[in-house]
Image 1: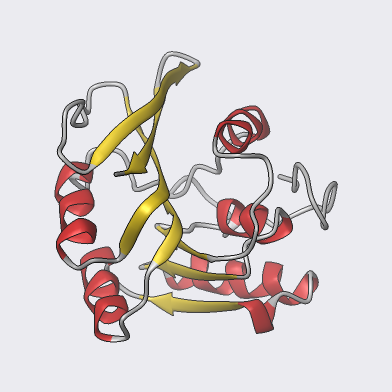
Image 2 (image 1 turned 45 degrees about the vertical axis):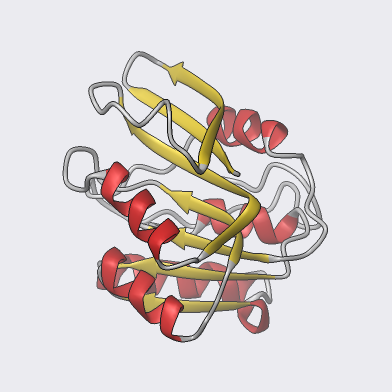
Length: 184
């Protein structure tokens, strides 16, 4: 695993050992960030189900000011912290061990909003549609926020939604599907 572009391009990241997490491949990461605008002009990102933190760190490398990383796994939290320390990104990040829905509630209490949301949950264990609606209900996203969802092909995400517009939906390798929304 490596960072594809930006300030930390080419730097290696440590992966969470075992089969409980599946890192987003470099090919998928590159394609996704090219769609969302290869570089960001500041803003906040939320990396839910962060695993090793690869997506959120990629966003920091590409110009996001600050990223909040959330994962339930103690092992993942440890790896995220190691990767952030190795790249000297601790001051531009927060790391929380929490359930995704609880993390959204906590962010709303702090009146945070995000310009980028990265959702890569374990396949079949979280209903992304419910998670998306919760983010909208809690006003965690603003007009023009990018929302990236990685999911199993069998999970159908909303195509028509009053506040979400699909920018791109693609399949990689027959099992991974990505849906990128822009908030209206």
